[in-house]
Image 1 (cartoon, rainbow, N blue to C red):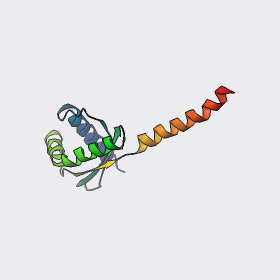
Image 2 (cartoon, rainbow, N blue to C red):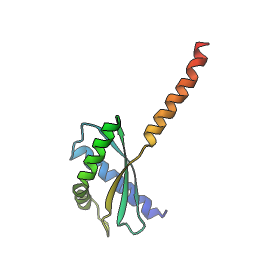
Image 3 (tube, rainbow, N blue to C red):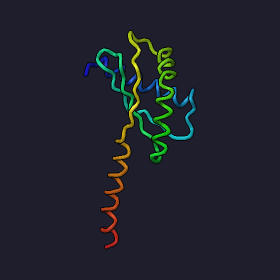
Image 4 (cartoon, helix red, strand yellow):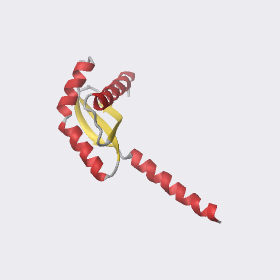
Length: 116
């Protein structure tokens, strides 16, 4: 991945995250934008998000983000200057969930040793 793509990915991630937490004031669930993957021609972007909560919170967040994708893209166009403003596709990122599950498994493995 080129240096330009890395910079564009980080810029878009930061701006979308800022917009969600300041302008949309998402309070029902904590949505974190974990990453952005912009195509080489900068016309499409996959935006990865994670949610603290259960499966219902995940579904609500996905519905919210996909429902407001055009508004988020419009605001992104006002905030950043790019030759092509990418079309945003939101995808759930399960990496935090996997990490939490792994930590729980490791804690469970340590528990029997402490009891002995």
